[in-house]
Image (cartoon, rainbow, N blue to C red; front, side):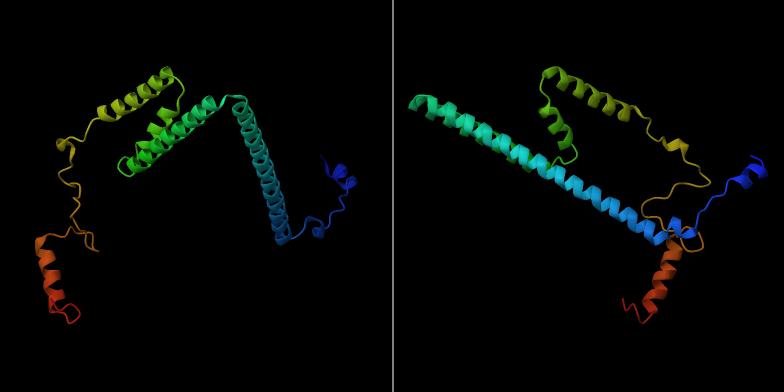
Length: 185
């Protein structure tokens, strides 16, 4: 665009039209609050729907049981309670074992949640392949240490000057500290 065409286009913008940074920040907060309210509303609707579904299923179950003879009704109720008891016992056992095998429990829960054996075997194959890859990674060989700059051990201390603290330096530091009034040992 040339200056002539720019001169013909006059923009009547005032700095007050843009708003201050504080106002734009409050606008963002308003939008966030509005979306949070919407999400809460959606969560409430989903919760109410789930509650209605559970109530309908309970009524259907009651109607089914009411249509059955007494002994069959008692037998079916007993089976349901035994099934719930087994599920609760399994969950309790898993919770107890989670303390011992915490890192493996997510994979185990995923495995037992799978519907068919083929999916379980695929999952186990991927786990085994991952474990095999990690075990086939070459371990550090002792010959790869740079003899001019060896790696530091867990008990190696470096002084402020960047010098590795050896036994002589440690004895001097401890000797000076033991003579101090602050450290009476």
